[in-house]
Image (tube, rainbow, N blue to C red; front, side, top):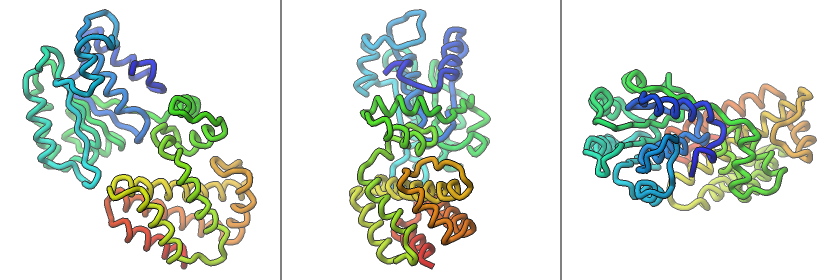
Length: 335
């Protein structure tokens, strides 16, 4: 990877380049912003640049030195990366302490020591406090980068106050479409749809590029066409779709979240159509279906369904049992 491959964050890249050129790089950064917009990619390229062993006046990795080869192979001894296990709702304190211990060791190649901790918003108070000494007395020539999917103001003050906060914003649709094209989405109509659905998040748009998910959308559209929803049948179909993701809870919860997102988008488009506003994601053949649905149930009910879907997504984020989320949500729709 190179800086040219990271789209939508030129301002942040220039800030780091200026800090590097003037010798004012910090020792601790908090990258905060929505998921899937490139925080991890930028953190990796920053690490690769600082660990590059070919000294030039350019703020970029050469891709050819021993340090770059080690980094590309994910075997660089001075680069540490940790993320929360998929089946946990908090970052395990043991894992945090292991990262701190490794981070405190002397650089093996005589340069920077860099640690990236993903899912920083899930740090418990105990885990965050374990970082305090490291943040206040960092090792020489070391950098700690925390990645958070929430706004910095939602982070624990003990962490936020000891880091330089770098705020990331959603990408422009053109940048999202370009990234989708790089990931093999050749159909321009599909690219446009995914870019709109992704809401400025290439990561979200890429996850939505799943033919099975779009096939399941037909079931959601069927719900909106039904006079009476069969809660048991919908729960069964939804559970089967989620189970097809495999045995691990992470992919299952991701599928659950994507279905809820699609459902909310359909509801929001129904409201847009009622008010004469062009829908964002609904295909032209769905316009009449969504219009009749909104006329039949009314805007108040659509609002209640939307709020309930958002609440179900929040439960999924808090690791409530998947089957309980499905049953409760389907039961709510069937009332």
